[in-house]
Length: 273
Image 1: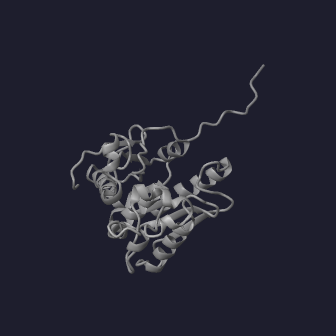
Image 2: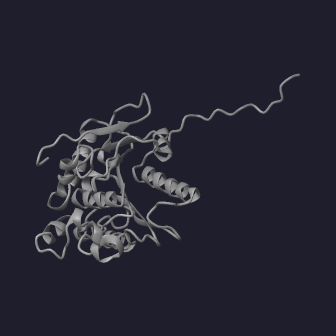
Image 3: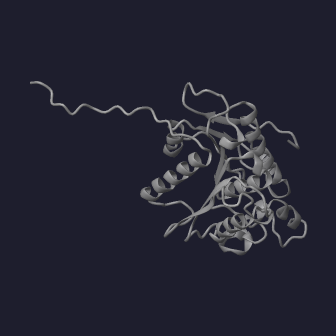
């Protein structure tokens, strides 16, 4: 990509999984605010891999994986580098025969939701499904709501004449084009999110539905948690429900089958004394 940078990516899956291009693959990213996405334990991701899915996490620019220069390479006027890195990671997974476009799902939350929104509007042909979670989708007005003003140091501001065209060029809400076939999308938000207000997700989902070029054959849906916020402190029961919906949608949208190993059931027959 331009400018050229080597972007590492962690690819994880069950042992023995055939790399034949048929694997449902979840490509997750963040790419901003100097936050590194390094390997970590996740029950939700473990379930995905137990079902036969592949998990891919690229260390795209905007994070802190390689220090402040790596962070600055993905902020303000250089924000497009973040999306280019993520798109390049997707293309690599396809070229490496890990998966194919129809089986490729992208996901991310908050700034990562922006990442998903930008990439799916720039390259709708590249992905089978998209799962933007509490994303910043309106880059021209984000600074006018709650804590959004504090992100201007990362994104810039539409009130600045130099920043405006940069933000407009990738703002997910403003780059939804009528008649386009976008990947199957399930937008996640919560009615009490006071960090990234749910209006971002409401408007983006509405724009996708209005622009739908598939005539209703490709779902464009929104999932709204009630009495919940940006994610922190969410009860375990709500987390489980969300993950069930996420993976169910991903599998259905990509035409994939869930393949769990047979469960081992303990015998209930009483033993002889």
